[in-house]
Length: 201
Ligand code: GRF
Image (tube, rainbow, N blue to C red; front, side):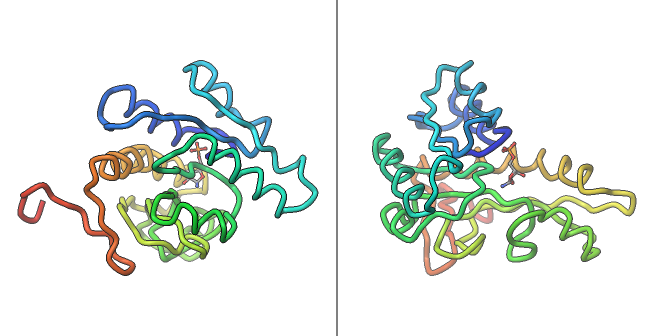
């Protein structure tokens, strides 16, 4: 599910096309009829549905339409990839532990919008990105993978975002790969990764 550029979506599509992920992408849903992600789906002949937030006066109607569209694809996993809306309680309970999101900070720091600006303003020396399961809170669900990047003194939001994005494109497909290989178990708010017999892997 996307709302914009779709570079994380592409990283997942690429990993599926390369055979790194044991799964198929059944469809993409965009909440924005002008999202560049839509053309990227068209080029790859990936089904893409638009459920445009702007065409719904009421948030509840948007949520119902989203849910109906997602249900139509019968997904095992839903990946939020730059999807700019909070999912409703009904959506989350129907797909509990089957929705992932990527966030451009080391959670639990800097939730919500403009995470890179927040990190710069706070003055942290390291930031990064987090792939997590989605629960009812904002960026609060169980953490699957994180990656760390340094923050430099001459960074601005764009340079930091670009450094983080490289890591996003690496860890999001990896998290999807682990899910599709049935190697993720949620215990409380921890995610246990089956290491496939490796010690301290
Ligand atoms: C990424 O930085 C992601 O972490 C955040 O929104 C941005 C989406 O970029 N949730 P893209 O649409 O995947 O290129």
